Every structure is written in C-alpha cells, then in structure tokens.
Image (cartoon, rainbow, N blue to C red; front, side, top):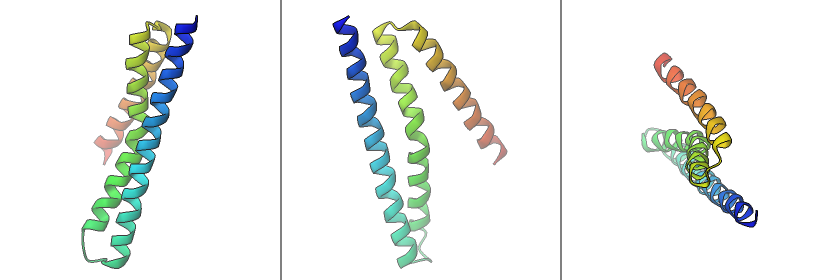
Amino acid sequence: MTSEFEAFARLERLLGRLLLVGLTTASVTLALGLSLLIAAPANGAGGMLLTAGLMVLMATPMLRIVASLVEYVRMGEWFFVLTTSVVFVELAVGVLIALKRS
C-alpha cells in the first residue's frame, strides 16, 4: 500500500513539474513575442514567438496525458491506462480534425 502511495506521489510531482515547465516556457515565449511585436511590428520574429508560445501552451496538456499514460503502465494500473488512452485518442482526433480543417 505504501509503495502504491509513493508511486502516485511521484506521478503527481512529475506532472506538477511538467505543467510548471510548460506554463513557464509558454509565458516567457508569449511575453517575448508580444514585446517584439510591440517594439518592431514589421519584424516577423514577434509573431513567430507568439505562435510558438501558443503551441507550447496547447501541447502541455497533451504531454501531461502522455506522461500519465507512461507512468500508469509502469505502475500496472490498467484501469487508468485504459481511461487515459481513451482521453489521449479523443484529444488527438480533435487536434487532427482541427488541423485538417485549417
């Protein structure tokens, strides 16, 4: 029981770090892009940084799902593997449909 609790605690720490890094990276990239866009509107670097920041921000939840899936497989929690796989497939299909329409 204690090792199961430790495994879930490790998973929570991993997911917390992942979300913190993703959010920090997205925030810094968006702030730099906005600053560049205001300072030099004709320069394309600001727009590229804004796009990159938004992509990082949108990718962070998907990375959380992938990290959860890997950890659940390692822990042998098959119910969570199944439910996390379903969420990942639904999210991936949504992203693919959105990309196809754009």
